[in-house]
Amino acid sequence: MADYDVIVIGAGNAALAASVSAREAGAGRVVVLEKATRQMRGGNTYFSGGLLRFAFSDVEELLEIVPEARDVPGFVDGVEPYPKEAFLADLMRMTDGRADPELADILISNSLDVVRWLANHGIKMEIAMSLGGVKVGNVIKWPKGAIVRAEHEGIGLSTGWFRIAEEHGVEIRYEAGAIGLLRNGDGRINGVAVKTAEGLSEITGGAVVLGCGGFEGNAAWRAQYLGKPWDHAKVRGTMHNQGDGLRMALEIGALPYGQWSGCHATPINAEAPSYGERKLTDKTNRLSYPYGVMINKLGLRFVDEGEDQQFYTYAKFGGIILHQPDSIAYQIFDSKVTHLLEPRYSTTDPVKADSLEDLVAKLDVAQGTANETLAAYNAAAGNGEFDPGELDGLCTKGLALAKSNWAQPLDTPPYVAYGVTGGITFSFGGVKVTERAEIVGTDWKPIAGLYACGEMVGGLFHYNYPGGTGLVSGAVFGRIAGTSAAG
Ligand SMILES: Cc1cc2nc3c(=O)[nH]c(=O)nc-3n(C[C@H](O)[C@H](O)[C@H](O)COP(=O)(O)OP(=O)(O)OC[C@H]3O[C@@H](n4cnc5c(N)ncnc54)[C@H](O)[C@@H]3O)c2cc1C
Image: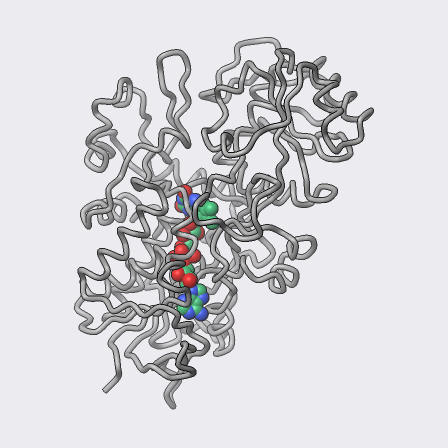
């Protein structure tokens, strides 16, 4: 008899969802193997902002999840529904139409239900005011689809998951890193090889669920698959996602799937540590650039900062910043907009000056070009009404690289500049899975007894990503993987 019915590798959102759903689907003995120590447990989920993007057709469906929001002035009338079609359109727009349609359908059709499932299990939710809500006069404008987050963000979500897993009788072993998959003679997965403080051992099981993250933490794999200069990128989250699950799966013939040369990376504080810092979690993010201007060390702008709202550009702008000279850029704002900066900007002190020239003089940039760039931007900035809560069409006129929205001149001192770099969040390349979350082999047949969820699922994200989708995807495919593995 096997040691366990289901062995789950990893202890983030996806893996713990799988462990709980396996128990709920009738698996008697479920074990979670977490490579990290108990103190460092929880993967990227712990570091996340806890933001959840899901489809809903009526604000009342949101209020079931965040009942307190009914008392927030303007919430009930101000929130626009986010039907499945809108979620799909966002996902396809972000991924240049490359998101796997079958996976996208599974993700989106189950998105509301899975958030209800989390809430019903006692993961308390709240409105993500500091992330997406923009106050315009006395009215708060909400971004589409990404309005709710776990209370206490990723820390709350991760802590909640461990509590729920324990309440469901899931055994959790820490400092237990899976290093290989075991198979019987007909190719069915029947266990894992594990490395613990006591040494190497084998654990047998009826099925194995891999939920142990992507390869974002692995400099060699980043260089190999993402190319230069990704090996030098700072990692926003856990140091434990080293591609172990992908390596184990590929070793036994899993089919690589999705964009292996792509990843989610965001503008973060240039001085952020090399890996995520548990006290700061996601507070190194610097995502209010739509209201300002970004220049690189050559003194040049290099993106349309106002191309779209932050949740639709931040996941690709990190990579673009990383490719600038020395992987550095500066976000410059004037005092008309500093009240709009996300609260997490307050975790660092900006460079400040009373004129743009004095500000530039304090930055490590080509001075002449930077002054020319800002002067040209100011001359081209739009005339019209600035509306931080929506695409306001206030665009530059005549610049080769336009700023398409929120293009106010930088004309009100004091001016501030924040140094940023690109920090990697997670890799997009993964393995192919079926609608039951079974891992598919290079023979295009499911590998019996092997399932994947979370960052390991390839095919959903390419080039870019609509904010708040990763956690919901992890919970949806984790829940499916656990149910399938128990069956
Ligand atoms: C700073 C930050 C902010 C984010 N904010 C958001 C957000 O607000 N909304 C959103 O949707 N997404 C967000 N994301 C993305 C999202 O958090 C992740 O994509 C998601 O948490 C991944 O879940 P997962 O379960 O697949 O992996 P993880 O949560 O990373 O879990 C992987 C687990 O596997 C373990 N592990 C690795 N290798 C092994 C091994 N060999 N054996 C055993 N265990 C192993 C790790 O220790 C870890 O416990 C954010 C990510 C970061 C880093």
